[in-house]
Length: 359
Image 1 (spheres, rainbow, N blue to C red):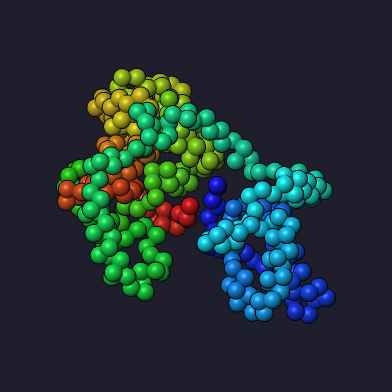
Image 2 (cartoon, helix red, strand yellow):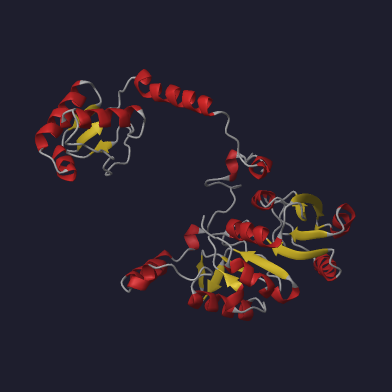
């Protein structure tokens, strides 16, 4: 039998001054919620005692309403577990509300989305690309993750929660955490950066979205690898950029062909360590060519995307050279943490701090 998550009290209001008796108001409210599919078949509902207490009324009208709902097949009881919305509701009963909603929409006229949303590429992800499997992207090495150490750390810090812990924090992320990341990057990755250049984000996709909104105006040209990481394509398309596909070969992004197709791109998006989806590494020769493009202002910003999982750590660019690095793994003190960070040029830090980051 299908089980629907319950434990939530539906929104039911009663008016003691109304002409309709209280039991009828409760009955009508439940019936409307079930027909409108706000309450799903199999979903548990509050007991009569709990609902009476919540509404501040006698239990008698609640019992009367529940009895009528049982008799008409809206409710069913299960021994030892409580009262549930019936799993055998007739189809015509739960579909009538949608005919009314469609009529309302027709009367209101057509509703349109923004022009920018209409330009977003449609998702055509292969079913084998997600979930466990040999070709799935973004899988973590669960057998190597230090779950015991992670659980101990979570439990230790959960016992030290203060009132300030529940307030809004720094939009760039925990200062102590960013200082630790900066120390790691300077020491283990030879990246020149400071804590104020690091933003903790929910993942590479959010970092690309923020970078696109900060660096680009609608219509700005952007080099994208062809084939490319679809998440980057969507992020820059959403920013209104003009996407310029640049082929890749065994050395990575073909800079000469990129210059030929668009000599003054505002941004070039590359995956240097493991090109997605082909997997090659950006050669030193191509990396130098991209650096020369930045110097000649042929391409001023080079965000480096990291579409893979924890083991797919990209080569970090030097933020002092006008680049941005997006990665989704931090290795510190022997632990691989599934964290996210974006290392940014100091020039754009102040602008990023003012950019909304809520998902």
